[in-house]
Every structure is written in C-alpha cells, then in structure tokens.
Length: 90
Image (cartoon, rainbow, N blue to C red; front, side):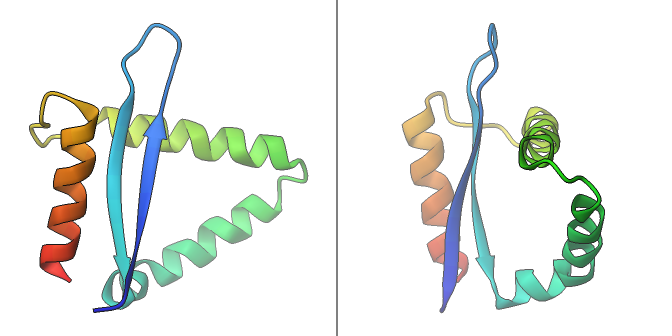
C-alpha cells in the first residue's frame, strides 16, 4: 500500500478555486508511464522554466474545470474526501 498523494489546485482571478486530490501508486504510474515520457520530451523543447510551468498550469486548470463528479460544497470537504478515497482504494 505504497502511494503518493498530490493536491492539484487552480486559482484564477474572478473564478472559484478548483482542486483535486490525486493518488499515485505503482499501478497508476505504470498506466501513464509512456504518456509521461512523451510529455517530458515535449516539455524539454521549451527552454524557459516559466513557459513550462505556464503550460502545465493551463492544462491543470482546464482539466480541473472539466470535472464531471459532484463535489462537496467546500474545499476542506473535497480534500478530505479525496484523501479518504485514496487511502480506501490503496
């Protein structure tokens, strides 16, 4: 039951915060290994760290904005439930 927990959060002016607790275990890493390698290769073509971070920020913001699941009403409950789900499945 070895896994990491990462909190992704996007905050934009004029919009509410969006966040998601993400669990990454060995099975998950294996599922995205080739995609991660491809993304890392593409990112290496951008030579400015701020540009790389801006790209990743846009992608995270878009992904979090497209969540289909019904979220609990406040951030603390979302973070707690995400962590509980993570622990429960691992």
